[in-house]
Structure formats: structure tokens, C-alpha cells
Image (cartoon, rainbow, N blue to C red):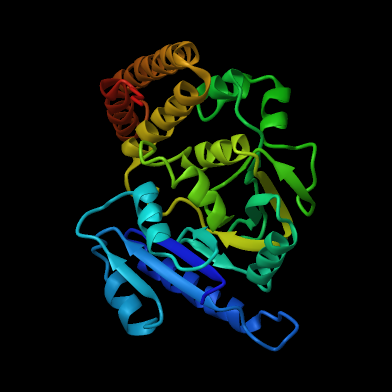
Length: 317
């Protein structure tokens, strides 16, 4: 029986998926448990109807991989849930296809979970493509975080808002408890999945790991960050394909989290503030377009902001 079930949800990133799968098998080959045996590894790829040859590539190059091709783009959360439903191991690793597992990180994370029975979720030290640190450990967002994060007001945020949220008072190489860790690489116990269920499929994209970690912590599990286990994350290659959708989903998911865990009042206030910001941005871009400043860029932004406003950033539960 596999010790780890790795679940990868793929959409049109064939070459990155190839590198990700190769890194997993290399990590398995390099893993030393002290008995000369490699940890049994199950790899499940849920493909969201990719049109770039991803499915054929997996079948040809990685016959050991369990492939679950879908006839439509089921989305990140649904895809991971399908993978977890099919998984056989007691430990799951939810892994983005645009990542590469480095050195002995796989066995390091597995050993840590085995030695720390109170830890339910574990996130690794994540690096950017160039090897620089990528921030993936977080404290839970406050209303102030929601107002300023990923909006044009972010430059006006008091320094303490993001310092606390991004845990800048901690070191990248530490092993420490966090409130939540980024879902690009997230190891968890089957017991957590059995107790709290899978990812909330109301989060189509973004905040699903935030919600999942919140539910796990509410159930009494620890969420940990391991600075000694490293992966490389090339970042957002699937979501880059749909810019306006990315904006809508990011902020709608943020609002859904606040409505689910903080109540309607927080949700309504935050939604009004976000829509007001996008309305103001739309007015600014229209003004710049009228005076002929970088018209092509302005048209693209106007289209995106208009789509966001038309969507209304509604977050139903």
C-alpha cells in the first residue's frame, strides 16, 4: 500500500506537469528511510479536459501514474476532491502541476507527520523559479487584510497588516505553526479528510486551502510550516490563462471565506468596499484612455474591471 498519495490537478500545462512528475519519481528514488527501501508512492493526475496533449504525455511517459481524465474543466477544488476520493494512502499530498519537489523534501515531510500526531496539515518551504523565497505561510486574514490585499489600496496599508498576515516575524527556514499554508503543496493526513471532508467546492479557485486549514484547526488539528522541506513553484500558470476570471474568483473567494467564517456583516462591508475600489479603477482607466495614454492597456483593464463589476462579487453559501 502506498504511503503517500500525490494528487495533481492539471489544466493545459503539459510541460510543467512533465517536470513535476519527473521530480516526484526522482524524489522517491532519492528517499532514504534508513532501511534501503523507497516509500511507496501513488500519483494521481486529475486532468481537467486539457487540450495541450497532457493526457497523452502522462500515458506515454508515466504509465505508473493513475490518470483521471475529465470531460470538462472541473476546477481545482473539485479536481482535488476527486483525487482524494480515489487515493489509497493514509497521507495525501495536494500538489500543483507547476511545482517541482526538491531533494529529500517528500520523505522529510512524511517523517514529520509520522512523528507529530497532532499535526494534520503540513506545508513546505516554497521557492520561486529563480530560487528566491516564496511566501506561503499565513495567519488568518482580518477585515483589514481583506480590504487591502491584492487591491490598489495595498500600498496604503499600515505595515503591521501585512507583516502579521505574512508572518514576517518568523524565519523562512523554521519549523513553526501557522494558521494556514498555501495550497500549491499541502500534505495532510487521511484522518483530517475523513473528519472535516474535502475542499469546499464553493471555492472554485483561491481561498480553498484557507478555508480547509480553518476547518482543520477548528477541529483541533495543527497546521505546520516546514522550512527544511523545499519545493519549487513556478506559480499561477493555469490561472494566467484567464485574467478577468482570476480577478473575479480571487475576490469572490475572499468574500465567501469572510461570509462563511465571520458572518454576513463582514461580508457585506468588504464587498461594498471592493466594488467601490473596482468602480474607481474603472473610472481612472476610462479617463486615461480618453487622453490616449497606453490605450491598448487601458482597454484591457477596462474590460477586466467591467467584468468584475458586472459579476458583482457575490459569494453565496
